[in-house]
Amino acid sequence: MNAFKTWFHKLGSPPFFYEFAGYLRPWLWVGTVVFAIAGLIGGLLLAPPDYQQGDAYRIIFIHVPSAWMSLFIYGVMAISGLVALVWRIKLAEIIAMESAPIGAAFTFITLVTGSLWGKPMWGTYWTWDARLTSELVLLFIYLGIIGLYHAFENERQGARAAAFLIIVGVVNLPIVHYSVVWWNTLHQGTTVRIFAPSSISLSMLWPILAMMIATKLYYGVSLLGRARIAVLERERGKDWVRQIVTEGTKNA
Amino acid sequence: MREFFAMGGFAAYVWPAYAVFFLVLATDLIMTSRRRRNFIRQFRAILLRQALRRKSS
Amino acid sequence: MTSPSLFSGFLAILQRDLLLAWRRRGDAAMPVLYAMIVAILFPFALGPDHQLLARVSGGIVLVTVLLAMLLALDNLFRSDLEDGVLAQMVLAPQSLSFLMAARILAYWLVTACPLLIAGPILGYMLGLPAQAQPVLFLALVLSSALLALLGSMLAALTAGTRRSGMLLSLMLLPLIVPVVIFAAGAVSAVEQGLPWIAPLAWLSATLALTLVLAPVACATALRITLDA
Image 1 (cartoon, each protein chain N blue to C red):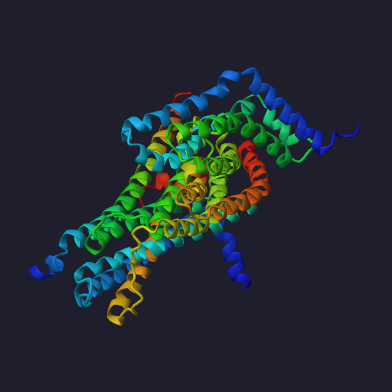
Image 2: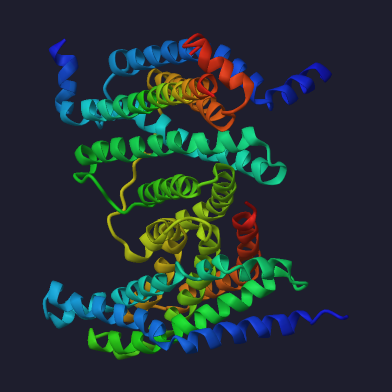
């Protein structure tokens, strides 16, 4: 336990984190590729066509994992943002801020794949359904956080301001979701259900789970890669950064 | 094989969705590696300039 | 030396802000002018069909008024940050959130009150049914107060940045979506002869909650901005 604690404290130090992330990243890459290939083969080749939706449902294997990631990454950002605000840990700021573009990317993917799925199923690319609208608002929340972070000249100050905005978004997002649900029932518009309450068969379920693991691992890969550069950028002027840069592309 | 690419008539929706998925994530990775390369290049230039200045003074 | 009480600090800020606004009366007219221009353009875009305009008028007035309030939001803290008044407020013996509450109240009085007068007139011009007018007014009061509270929190957050007008709107959109839904929901409910009290009650409850939380959040955001 004590060894773990010292290890965890060491992880907060930028040079140690840089090196540790550099070692971890290739392994995460291997995992990402293995699970993605398994999930894609299982989803595109092995799983039978759906008896209602035909082959169009195969978008589920990227849509649902992306949708899950869009919320999962926000959760990670909320936790590290809170840590950054309370304890002012530099690494927590970096994790929160470097997660935001990845989260925005997954949210964008969710919206686009969702509308590409919606066209053959509901006959329209877009409908003001609660789920879709909330996801769109989530994209705007992500963009606001990224924009606020980059608007500051001092990146630590920007990170703290953006972390504050992340916390505001945590409170806001459920409010948006439920108000849109209420709005839809008031207007009685096009109420379409994405998921019929049918249980999903195992041959379709396991590729989704594999893709979920693959996207999580990919997030790790991308986040560590981004965080390593962010650490270098923020610590420029320190000796260890100078050493890494002059040593060349070793361990890049 | 052709049957696989046809996706039961839904090829126009399924394949663009997968293309977007991979393109967006690839862009994410490419931007990260470019950011790294730019940082190292700029930082090296700064170090070089500093070294030159030290030599001349 | 005894420090002045909490309430006198609140009053002093309110008085100062109102005086400043009075000295620059022209600025206060800008949002109203903007709202009128936008609302007047709608009939030209949609055609003079009376029924169609009556159906959308509530929503148009609501959105226009809220957008017009955004105009003044960007400068809410900027000039005070530049000349150091905000730093003095942080150091003042009174709680910063209370002083922020005074500032938000002044902003609401100066920006929203003219719009609250213009709103029903615009609604009438667009053919809003008479029975919907009081509900629209109530919805405007509640939603403009909510926008002032939420917006000033974000304005405090962006005060330390370079020009941020677009960023402010981007950040405000997710926060204002529920407000617009409920405010416009009440207006469209009364037009359809449905009970309209529920959405307004929700708005009032949210306003009560925001009234307590937003000044505190505003003060926290300001401390982040000033801590360089």
